[in-house]
Length: 202
Image 1: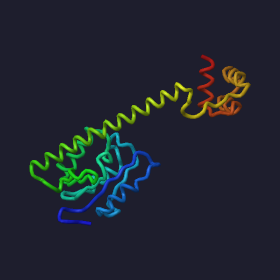
Image 2: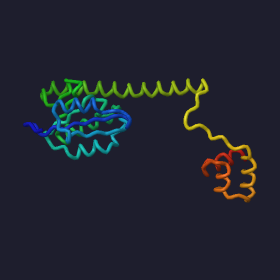
Image 3: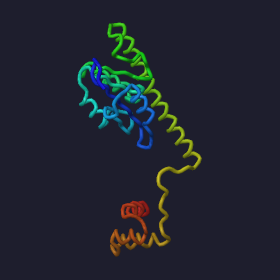
Image 4: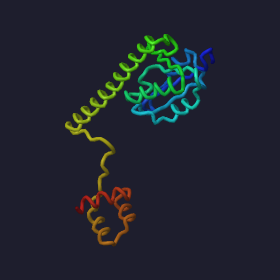
C-alpha cells in the first residue's frame, strides 16, 4: 500500500526460531502493511547482523514508512538502535513508526519540539530495552549457578566408557590399535575417545 508519504513496510523479530512472530505480524497487517513488505528475522537482538533487516533496508526509499511493533524488536543494544534510527531517518529519509509507542512516529510533529520529544522517548526506551536484556542475562547466570550448586548438570550427558576402556586406551597408546578402531571398540566418536584417552593418560 502507498500513501502520499510512500510505501508501507514492516519489520518483525523474534529471538529464537522456536518463538512465534504472529502477534507482531497481526499488528503490522492491521496498519495495513502488505504481507510481502514485512521482513522477519529469527535471531537475537544483540546486534544488527541480520539478513532480513538489511534486505529491508535495501528496499527502502525516501518517504517510505517503516512500522515496528515495539522498540525492542529493533534490538536490545542501546547504541546500535540509535545508530540505525539515524541511518533510517536521516540517511535513507524514511519515516519510522513504533506501534506500541505513539510518541515515536516521525510522520507527526516534524517541528523542532516534535523531533526533540520523539528523540528523547526513543533514547529512554532504547536504554530500558538494553537494561532489560542485561537483567535477563544476569538472572540466567544466577539461575545456572544456583542449579550447578544443586548438582544439576548442563549439556549432553557424559558418555559412559566401557569396562575395558583402559585396556583399549593402552593398546591405542602402544600403536596396536588405530584411533578409529579403538573408538569403535569404546563405542564412542573418535574425537570423544581421543579426549577421554588423553585426559586419562595425563
